Amino acid sequence: MTDMQAGERLLARLLAAQWDDEEAEQLHFGARRRLASEFFRRKAVWADALGITRLWPFADIALAFDPATETDPAWLERLEAGVGRELLPAVRKVVTDMFRWQSLGERPYERFPEFDDPYEPMVQVFELGGEFMPGQGGIDIYIGPVPYLDLAARLAQPPIPIDPATLAALDETDRAEVERARTAQREQQWSGRPDASTS
Image (cartoon, rainbow, N blue to C red; front, side):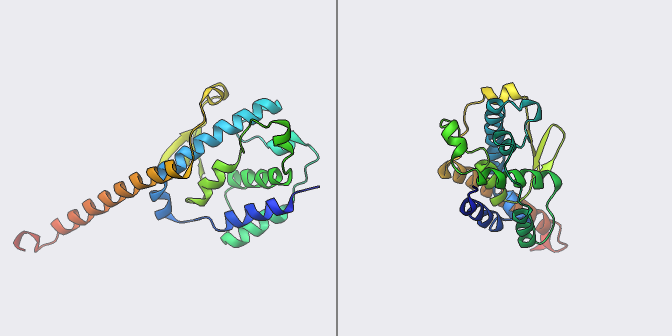
């Protein structure tokens, strides 16, 4: 028995995400990096508990939890139809297991009640600026990498707060930085005008 309503809720969130929005990537840079780091920590916790550490950080934990979990391609097809293009392979892999995970309902948390939702941080990464790019030893979020680190380091990492107030504070910092950069660019353009010295 799968949780179709949970899948529909996830799809609605992903369809509303800011895909292909460079300004969103700039304005949410710090928040997205924090969310990605917490995603790797949570995936490490679940992978360790389910005995699939060799496949971390992109292990399909839904299949590890229940190998009989079905993969319904319609979820990804509907998402890509809404986005208007095919997502990157690494992102498609993550999204596919997100939908598998949602189909499990509360079963994983009945077995591991102390664990956090492994995919919530990455859902918010997508919501705040779309895809990540696979990098060398990590993923790239706009102009900065987020390293995988090794499993032991992520397991030792304390949970990172991703509450709305914390993320909003990071967004405010990014907004201020973007505005400073835009002001500097305008001033540079103005100083380069032929009549700037005589105005």
